[in-house]
Length: 111
Length: 116
Image (cartoon, rainbow over all chains, first blue to last red; front, top):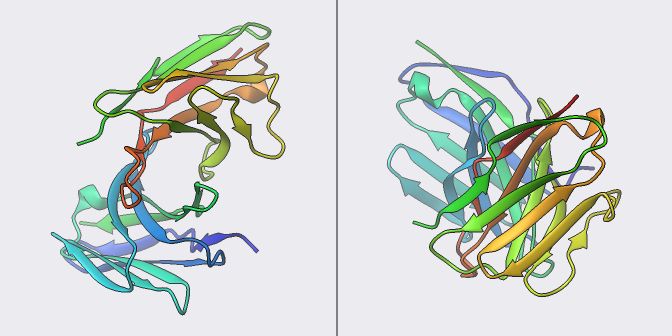
């Protein structure tokens, strides 16, 4: 079982709709979770991070964390074509200082 | 915000030669930096953790004699791919954190290595 699992997609969402990206993790030692966006051939860029149960909103993005279910999600409202990218979920374990990435979900926003 | 600079952005080298990649934290000190490798359509895989003033910690399956890491200062870590071979062609990315327990990792722009 992979430590961080994501549906590889591709996930296609119409422009203006809400895109929902999901991630589950197996390491209960992971304390902080990060969503990165990666365009093809580019380095990942941080979208959001969350470490408390519940929701965290930043503009069009909302991250959700449920530690009991070991589940993290990212919602993108009013999806734009520029949101088309691969989204990487990562969990950070401060004990061993390891950031473990999922394989990423490829998101395509359809104009 | 925290900035991590990586150089070069891309490099093409002949098989058997060595390549050095630099990773600098521009506006913060990083006692720890991380080196990742990403093959096409695959996720980031941690290669090693670079520790300032001490030996790097390598992940299982990563040859420490092939991927030499030096972290001589709080703002600079280098990765040297020695005796590169075509199978070493990949996207190498470094990252660092300002050290706040809740501060995320910041990534360099990556280095595209092609070994011919």
